[in-house]
Image (cartoon, rainbow, N blue to C red; front, side, top):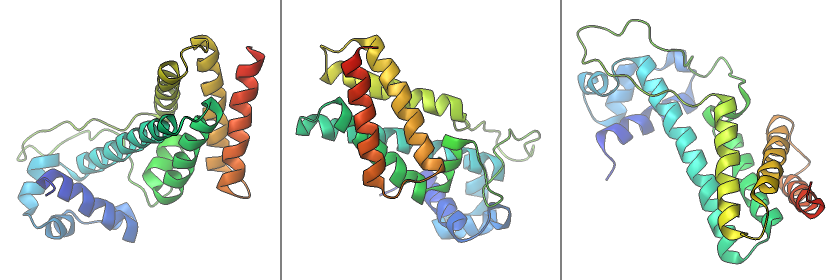
Amino acid sequence: MPTVREALLDAALSALDAQPWVAVRMVDVAVAAGVSRQTLYNEFGSKEGLARALARRETDDFLAGVERALAAAEHRGDDAGDSFAAATAWTLHTARHNALVRAALTGCRSDRLPDLAPDPAPRAYYRPRIEESAPSPRALVAEFRTRAAGAFEHTHPKLDPADLGRACEAAVRLTLSYVIAPAASDNDACQQVARLVRGLLARGF
């Protein structure tokens, strides 16, 4: 059973799927989650706090999905190229279906999405709470690269860590190019990423 916090975040995400964030009302989010509006404000402090918490959860879930994709590839015995292709497939799927993750990866925010700037003046009559913002695009890309490289160091110990880091950096950047300008198919994009990773590691830089 989800916690109150998770139920509120789920309700906020559903509301955002249906209408622009500016039109989302806190009272409607609270009703959808089955709690009072006061409970919502107690949990997040403000609508801005709710937006930041939602964006943070979605980007954390995205990174967890990257790790799951890499772990599944390890279980199958995939090489480094196919392993990163699995992470690419997850990234393309998530970015297509989750506007918050897409915006977090690319820095391109549509008018439908919340402005994640810090709340300058939380209302004094609500319990103050500081929600951690989602990482910047640069930080999110760096975390994606770091987690992929870390997984490969574990699954492919004979590969040079510096080479792995550079291959992952290039593969992440190529993956993001397909987020911004999709390929003919996700499979085409994943195969291109796999070939890139294999080629870079084979050359040893």
